Image (cartoon, rainbow, N blue to C red; front, side, top):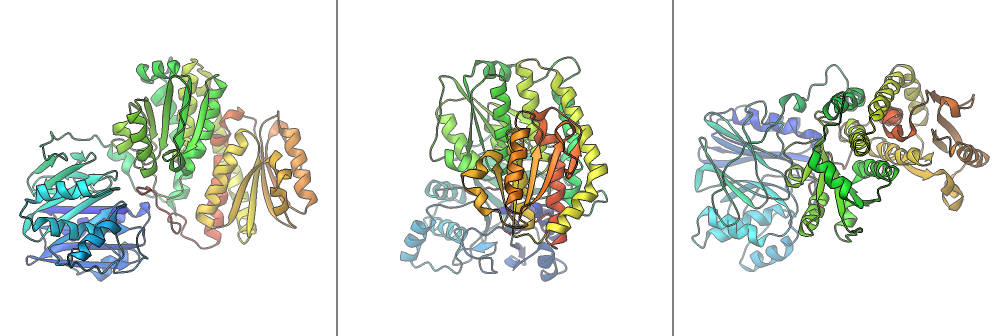
Length: 593
């Protein structure tokens, strides 16, 4: 991973490749490169670092009919020019870019080396290129060759391929990693995301797993793993939801934090028409029939799943929550009629795709909650709920997290026809607005004060602790401050040993059932010299609390108070001089396991 572009036909090749890669830079990467035909020869330009650096390094003018490009997030081999993409086969007959991970690449590499193949990089991607080259020697067509190669490869891949002997076509292969084709007038485009394509055409084809595409300037032919032609279907992408405009903001993260309110209100309008909920009635029937809800997610989506499980339990429906990368290898399914809900902002999360395959084999119904229409998970689920939060460019998720929680609040309330949820969500939006107006500058000052902290702890109970997990993750992701989220009652069972003089501790108190216990926990850390900052609702507040906000329904903590933690993390990163939107080592769409 992380980003792929490609083009063929009457189009400014360099502009599309470079600008396309720039639109994909939110996915995270450490190197970039392009390959294109020039005088019937493949030329490659690649570099460690930014796409802007690649743009400077590449020729000013490129006259070419065909090209591919890539931004790489290192999986095999350190970030360096040699390990960057595009890669070539030993004899340079095959040039390709690859997202994904080939699990059996060492076995294939050994076989090829025994045939005399040599490799220059540490990547698994170079192995694919030489395997294609070697298979072509048998005299097979490229279509049959790609079929054979796909059958041999284990793992995930999305590849865009230039073949030296056929300069009139681009070739694509796909399994468990996204890639799509944009159909234009006299040209066709390739990308791992709709964002680079949507400016040129709305006719987009999402490849399904184990499909092969052969693309010329005028046509697209699609085949399955048995090389049978596939009827082409176009995906519906909404251009307005793919905008990358900063709208005057200095960073996407700040813009996206301040879009939370509108995103939540839009969800209310999408799933409640003023009189009744508008979720798919078949989905509601299956949820009513379920005796156990299994949530599966990763990172931020896992934290949203924790909240969603509480919502179902509140409706007296059993619910379990699992981390996808664990569940994929240790599946746990309980209940006579389970139902699985998978949360993924991108809809392309490799760990969740792995889980989806297992779930489908067992014949269990699935719902995917995602921000990406037409994504792999959305297409393969029995049901989907689209967040319609708009493109989230910042690697650290903010508005998509809040949207996931809001969507689950609406869904679970619809099960009992509890229409008050819409009123409650609108109340949460009012609090978000107040935080933006009244507390943002104070949170910036706190971030400036604590930016050099080595450790920071978040405390809460119940819904507040669920949100503490997300608050802690955000701080880690973009400020690189080590932080932990601890249930208040767990302090005395070990973590309190970490509390020393002046250790910052941020505490959330919104639940009257646990407020008194949380105040005791505050005294425990203060007695060890902690520097404590309390965020409390008005009815549970004390005079010296750091931030006091109006009372709100406690089950919406992860929406109402979300901007407090998000602003704090944002300003801490800013104060330390880091790249807020593109933190180190992280990728937006995690398409490898």
